[in-house]
Length: 136
Length: 138
Image (cartoon, rainbow over all chains, first blue to last red; front, top):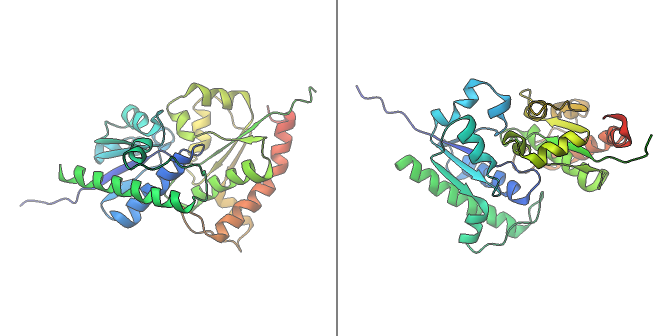
């Protein structure tokens, strides 16, 4: 008998409290989880790789993982690689914005209308990457 | 006493899964932007996870307040993992327990209750910030 397991993708987002791209990343990732690919993606708070236990550190072993970073320091990608496992894909917000000809956000909180539109574009890019990983 | 006014570093939970993570972040922004601008600063918590030298120096040189969104206490533990003891530690849910008329909702973006709760929490933390800035914590 063949058991079909529903595979989910793990998303690890930059939380970037100090940069607008971090806020954009958080909002875009929540859109993917709640609206664009509900039931197909899960997330973990990035600092849990340090503060949590072995279960949290097994995240990237349990799920093919997409990291989403807000800046070139790439905390999400590096933390996942170092403490959990190699990500299936690594995305960078500035690269996504550049690809779509969108200016960098400037708001840390209370995104402006055009920044909310940018979050939607980023979320759709992440959702497409979820599909690629699930269909790989 | 030197009279030097320190920066006070406030580090919030990074969570994107629970409303109290959002409360922690919003309280931090209220402190930075409205209550004690120029005194309260923050940095990205994940920078401590990758042991970024600038972030580590910031928390080593200044008193640190952590505000966590759940009992896993990532902000608190991430600071301690760098060998630094936070001057004060808070759980955002306790802000709600003290103001039960303001039940917050929202994760990516807080509702009105959440924003009001964070503003009140920031006002209540102002005295602690002042004490630490005056050298009372480090």
